[in-house]
Image (cartoon, rainbow, N blue to C red):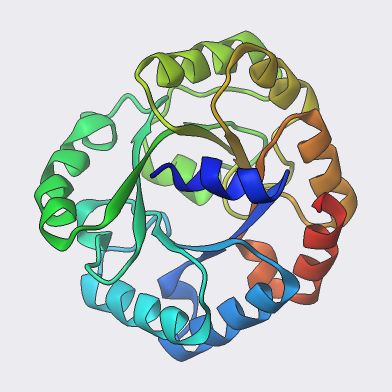
Length: 242
């Protein structure tokens, strides 16, 4: 089952909430997920750039699943962040990494766990776009072939590669706490060239910006930092895209 396509059959645009297990207790994560669920978010992503504590991820997922009845999707930075109690996992390749670890090694380490625990994989081409003066956490952790916000053809090339590798979606990511989101012009250009769903996240802090991204071609908007700073903003963002 292609979860994102199935959800998009019901709603034209989607919102996913990203919860980093390291940024709050499992109980607080469950409470945050419930608030976002009540506002209309479609799924809860669990992960972060530095999470490597499987027990913490497990307890966070457990708390979230007690609080909401929507899909839980692992968004792992490594095989150590794979937890058996999640519904789905973004089985992703960091397309513009030049580090073999993020291209294939962690995926190999986690594959047997995903199979054993029957977690449903969602293949993803993960593309990090550099939009901030200071590197975001994902840029600091991963060794990247940088894609600046004005390097549109470069982003298209990576997106097409993901599609040709038969991935189910791509994620254009500015990074947690990014100063600026992925430019609308880049999203529109990528949308014109590929057919698979486009997820966009990083630096989206209000409804107006989120609406611009969906009009440009984003199918899914992701918020992480915004849920930690002010959950009420999520209501505004979700209402604006739906």
